Length: 316
Image (cartoon, rainbow, N blue to C red):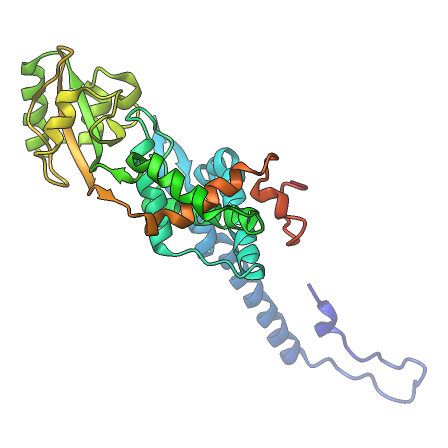
């Protein structure tokens, strides 16, 4: 505390002929009062957390009376996922800088093609895409496409090789309708009917899948089995056929599977099949053939030094 506010002029004792000056107590008391009020207000402000502190200490869960705060939750998430998420963010910015420098464009149509190809080649048990929503997935694909275009831009590919590849692999670009699906597997038809009743009573499909499904791998994901289409080897054929009759966002009835089990399916999204012409996939094929000529592996992190990328985890 700055007590200089209370300092007074010295009494000149070396001038005895002058009478001593009496202190004016009223101004001093006013100053003391102001200081006391300021300290009181500071103490009150200290007791009341600001908005940021309040949000950090906000309760998000409790177990047997023990509180889990938002700050603890966020710190745990940062520890588990923070590095991976930040890596994606930095890589995305690095690739955008590379696209600008090399005058590279990535269109929505190119991203749509890549997504369609990804869905058509994913097995039903492949859960690598389940963690991402559509927006994040599109951003990741965009970054990958920029990287591939940077690497392939100076590689010469003959037009004949591109056309030959297309003619020999047309089936790759004739993509069937796929269904983003969650499934609850049960042992008997009666159990399936019981699950349907709970769903009609507005029970959560995700929760019922975790609780009732007999398939451990999909049950742990709330029943999510990814993208299903005709020809998906890991999915019962009867289930694939039943999905064709279910509308987007709706749940099927009890489906009798060929392996003796029963299932109830939720169709989250439907992606209509499409046959891509040579003109639509020419750029994709050219890039793939160019990349096949590059024998060394190059990642997005390889460009960090060029674009002066840094992060809190030190050198990449």
